[in-house]
Length: 134
View 1: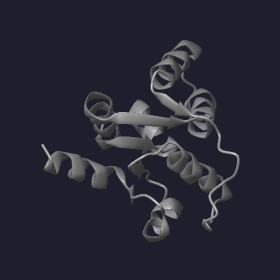
View 2: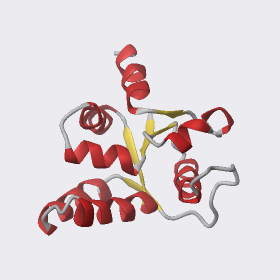
View 3: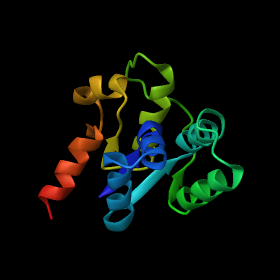
View 4: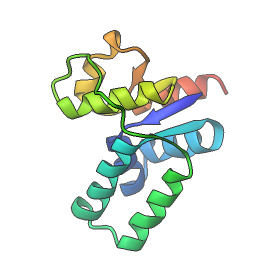
Protein backbone atom coordinates (compact mmCIF):
# COMPACT_ATOMS: atom_id res chain seq x y z
CA UNK A 1 0.00 0.00 0.00
CA UNK A 2 1.25 3.50 -0.87
CA UNK A 3 0.90 5.63 2.26
CA UNK A 4 1.21 9.42 2.44
CA UNK A 5 1.81 10.72 5.97
CA UNK A 6 0.88 14.30 6.83
CA UNK A 7 3.27 16.55 8.73
CA UNK A 8 1.44 16.21 12.06
CA UNK A 9 1.77 12.42 12.00
CA UNK A 10 5.50 12.66 11.26
CA UNK A 11 6.08 15.26 13.97
CA UNK A 12 4.35 13.01 16.50
CA UNK A 13 6.29 9.98 15.22
CA UNK A 14 9.65 11.67 15.77
CA UNK A 15 8.76 13.64 18.91
CA UNK A 16 7.08 10.94 21.00
CA UNK A 17 6.69 7.24 21.42
CA UNK A 18 3.24 6.06 20.61
CA UNK A 19 0.81 5.31 17.84
CA UNK A 20 2.31 7.66 15.22
CA UNK A 21 5.80 6.23 15.78
CA UNK A 22 4.34 2.74 15.40
CA UNK A 23 2.50 3.79 12.23
CA UNK A 24 5.70 5.19 10.73
CA UNK A 25 7.64 2.01 11.59
CA UNK A 26 5.05 -0.29 10.04
CA UNK A 27 4.73 1.85 6.92
CA UNK A 28 8.51 1.86 6.44
CA UNK A 29 8.74 -1.88 7.06
CA UNK A 30 5.72 -3.18 5.17
CA UNK A 31 4.42 -0.50 2.80
CA UNK A 32 5.60 2.30 0.51
CA UNK A 33 5.96 5.68 2.21
CA UNK A 34 5.20 8.52 -0.19
CA UNK A 35 6.58 11.86 0.93
CA UNK A 36 5.61 15.28 -0.38
CA UNK A 37 8.04 18.15 -0.78
CA UNK A 38 5.40 20.34 0.88
CA UNK A 39 5.38 18.06 3.94
CA UNK A 40 9.17 17.81 4.09
CA UNK A 41 9.60 21.58 4.11
CA UNK A 42 7.00 22.03 6.83
CA UNK A 43 8.41 19.14 8.88
CA UNK A 44 11.97 20.50 8.72
CA UNK A 45 10.76 23.86 10.05
CA UNK A 46 8.73 22.31 12.87
CA UNK A 47 11.54 19.99 13.97
CA UNK A 48 14.13 22.77 13.98
CA UNK A 49 12.13 25.76 15.18
CA UNK A 50 9.31 24.45 17.35
CA UNK A 51 10.86 21.26 18.72
CA UNK A 52 14.37 22.71 18.64
CA UNK A 53 15.99 19.43 17.63
CA UNK A 54 19.73 19.59 16.96
CA UNK A 55 20.61 20.30 13.31
CA UNK A 56 22.23 16.87 12.95
CA UNK A 57 19.08 15.12 14.14
CA UNK A 58 16.94 17.14 11.74
CA UNK A 59 19.35 16.29 8.91
CA UNK A 60 19.17 12.57 9.77
CA UNK A 61 15.36 12.62 9.78
CA UNK A 62 15.28 14.49 6.46
CA UNK A 63 17.74 11.99 4.93
CA UNK A 64 15.60 9.05 6.09
CA UNK A 65 12.47 10.56 4.60
CA UNK A 66 14.12 11.78 1.39
CA UNK A 67 15.25 8.19 0.79
CA UNK A 68 11.56 7.43 0.18
CA UNK A 69 9.62 8.44 -2.90
CA UNK A 70 9.27 12.24 -2.81
CA UNK A 71 6.52 14.02 -4.73
CA UNK A 72 7.43 17.54 -5.92
CA UNK A 73 5.08 20.34 -4.98
CA UNK A 74 2.11 20.06 -7.36
CA UNK A 75 1.44 22.84 -9.86
CA UNK A 76 -1.90 23.55 -8.17
CA UNK A 77 -3.56 22.82 -4.84
CA UNK A 78 -6.55 20.52 -4.61
CA UNK A 79 -9.77 22.15 -5.75
CA UNK A 80 -11.69 20.73 -2.78
CA UNK A 81 -12.71 23.40 -0.30
CA UNK A 82 -10.72 22.87 2.90
CA UNK A 83 -10.77 25.33 5.79
CA UNK A 84 -6.97 25.60 5.91
CA UNK A 85 -5.70 26.44 2.39
CA UNK A 86 -2.31 24.82 3.17
CA UNK A 87 -4.10 21.47 3.48
CA UNK A 88 -5.13 21.72 -0.17
CA UNK A 89 -1.42 21.33 -1.06
CA UNK A 90 -1.13 18.26 1.18
CA UNK A 91 -4.11 16.61 -0.49
CA UNK A 92 -2.84 17.53 -3.96
CA UNK A 93 0.58 16.05 -3.10
CA UNK A 94 -0.94 12.77 -1.91
CA UNK A 95 -3.02 12.50 -5.09
CA UNK A 96 -0.04 13.42 -7.32
CA UNK A 97 2.03 10.73 -5.62
CA UNK A 98 -0.56 8.06 -6.33
CA UNK A 99 -1.04 7.37 -2.64
CA UNK A 100 -3.59 4.74 -1.67
CA UNK A 101 -4.28 6.56 1.60
CA UNK A 102 -3.51 9.89 3.28
CA UNK A 103 -2.91 9.61 7.02
CA UNK A 104 -3.43 12.72 9.12
CA UNK A 105 -4.53 13.96 12.49
CA UNK A 106 -5.67 17.23 10.89
CA UNK A 107 -9.38 17.66 11.52
CA UNK A 108 -9.78 19.89 8.45
CA UNK A 109 -8.57 17.09 6.17
CA UNK A 110 -10.49 14.40 8.04
CA UNK A 111 -13.65 16.51 7.67
CA UNK A 112 -13.52 16.33 3.87
CA UNK A 113 -12.63 12.63 3.70
CA UNK A 114 -15.97 11.64 2.14
CA UNK A 115 -15.35 14.02 -0.79
CA UNK A 116 -11.65 13.28 -1.26
CA UNK A 117 -10.29 11.31 -4.25
CA UNK A 118 -8.51 8.89 -1.88
CA UNK A 119 -9.18 7.56 1.61
CA UNK A 120 -8.15 9.92 4.41
CA UNK A 121 -7.62 8.18 7.73
CA UNK A 122 -6.35 9.16 11.13
CA UNK A 123 -3.37 7.19 12.47
CA UNK A 124 -5.63 4.79 14.40
CA UNK A 125 -7.68 4.12 11.26
CA UNK A 126 -4.55 3.18 9.30
CA UNK A 127 -3.22 1.08 12.18
CA UNK A 128 -6.49 -0.84 12.40
CA UNK A 129 -6.56 -1.32 8.62
CA UNK A 130 -3.02 -2.69 8.32
CA UNK A 131 -3.24 -4.80 11.46
CA UNK A 132 -6.51 -6.42 10.32
CA UNK A 133 -4.72 -7.66 7.19
CA UNK A 134 -1.86 -9.25 9.15
